[in-house]
Image (cartoon, rainbow, N blue to C red; front, side):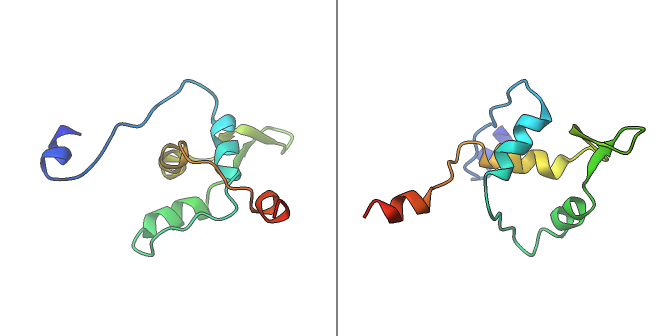
Length: 94
């Protein structure tokens, strides 16, 4: 990371917590929409094929994915410090 900082990028390290992927997936699901640049073609490609792993009965295992979701992990870390605004509550309190 020091190399990128020396090159002028303003970066800080991600806070990595020990825990399940399910907890992190729930964090991402709180966002109704996540917008990504059209230049990030690999993000779209990876997330399109991302599904939960299934057990022998064909039931989803909600803590595991069919592939190692590097892109989803990056999204978890990027959005971790943000809170979702509750516009309904704000609108009705007027």
